[in-house]
Length: 286
Image (cartoon, rainbow, N blue to C red; front, side, top):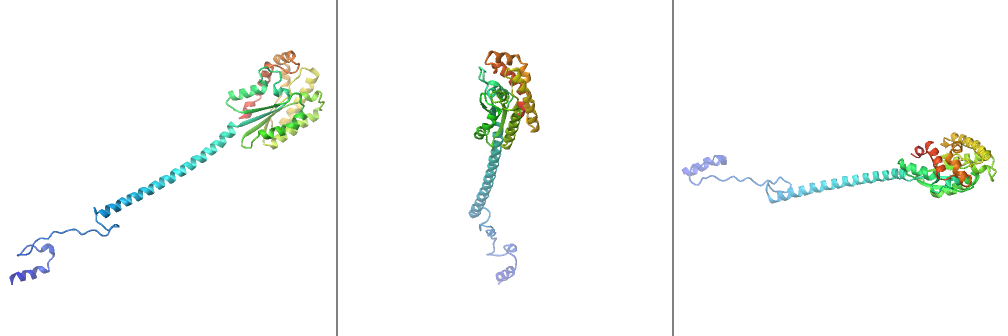
């Protein structure tokens, strides 16, 4: 009866208060239940929980990899765009084309070095850090009118809108010879040529006609050179007058006299090249 009473007495007490008062009553170990609240249904340390954590880690790592890959692609796209823009700029700078139109003085007739004044100013430009491709388009004996008739057709295959293309004109010495072209027509021809070059987007530079060793003819050329200077100035085109300095140049006159009477040798063309360079030719190229 006593045991039954004790059983009744302990029945309403919490499990932690059931200290052994009699036979058959002992301590029971308390085991924490599995935590079923996690996304994988297992407690901490449970295999499913570990597997879930690894899965999440791999998933996050994959997301990071995708983000990094997207950033890398965008960076590559920006680099390609920058390279393309740089390439276009470099092409404009390095693909500089200069077309030299004129008569035998453009061609360098009489110069045993084969340079003429054009080759010398091109070499000086390179030495000053300005690269260019020179097209020497001089035809011996041609007048201004003859040059004007052919220059556009010869320019077309050599110019490119993506490049820095320019033109240098030098003619007029032959206008007072057999061609018998009036000064007015020579002046109008230069104006038409410069306007046409401007319409094609070509920046231009004019070198006045040089002397030929005939006093009367050179006087006419000197007057024509002054008119040419006015035409160029009206259009903002650089112009260099060379006739008077070359008439006074011993190299030019002595070499021309020793040759065919009109064309100098290396020294005379060197003097002409110095005049063109002093007039700012390299600066015009920049």
